[in-house]
Length: 258
Image (cartoon, rainbow, N blue to C red; front, side, top):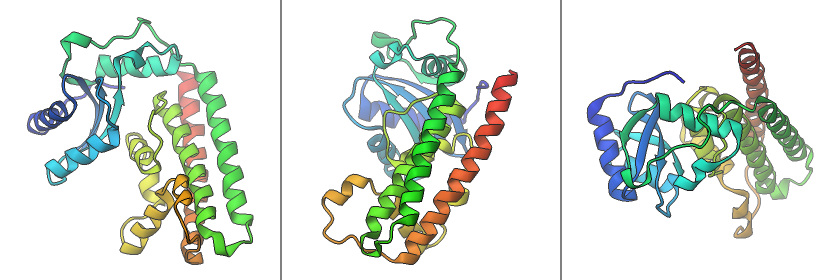
């Protein structure tokens, strides 16, 4: 992770909103794309990152958006090598917007290292789960329960996103909504936006269908959906699996040579 410099006006507004909503906190920006920021927030507030992200977008009329990693100070005491390494890199190279002096963030290990072997094992697990669920969705003959088949594609895509984040960032998220995870993947790859089209109302509808958590099935009374929507999502998820595999192979080659 290289040191970054960011536009002052936008980051000041971002800081103002987060502090107003979360109270005393430490905020680090570890990446940006135009007016979209990737931020780590350390605080004790009982709220989700997704909620704060939505508030930032709404309060700025979407002129400023963010993908947020939200952690309590105690989360920094993790003994996971890659997670520690990720936090260390953000603290060293990210741009700090504010510091909660009553709870100064720090990690115990002063020289954390990536646990690449564990990250690789995690990636292979993610691929195995994704392949199983994609194949199960593809082979199911029950067209009347299409939303159940889409739920399998959701599980597959979540696993792939988690695996990508672990390999490219050394980070393990604590929120697991698919849309959130794909946004976080946008920090290091355009693959999600390339394979999950959102350029038309029909594409947006399909994307929302895919991102609906499987737990929504608890409340559903109708499980059918347009078969063409399922076929498109199935193709999208297969592309996501194939593209992710290529990305990870390339990234692991780089990591093993450094």
